[in-house]
Image: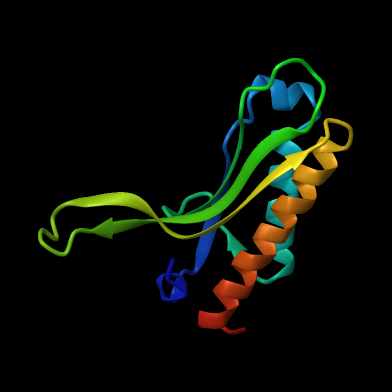
Length: 137
């Protein structure tokens, strides 16, 4: 996705999609992830404002697994969502992902929460670099 879509974004809110019950059982904590993402963005000088439309979303998906043994297949994504208009009809607007990155991995159940947190941190770092490339401090 195009970094240029981040130019001029003054603030974002942070939305963490709820993890599946299985991931929650394995220790993935939505609120801890949200606090970590907000802190990382604030430390990077990116304003957090829960009243703006633009948001940084984090989603964590896992494939069904048989039993509790073996690695957990995961897709972790971070994206920026903004209101966009169709070029053919400017009156038609919707919210769409305008920038994003994701990681696909298989993670052992032991330490899953730590690995998810570290991966979200890495993806948020990617966002900060993309944001700062078009919005220098």
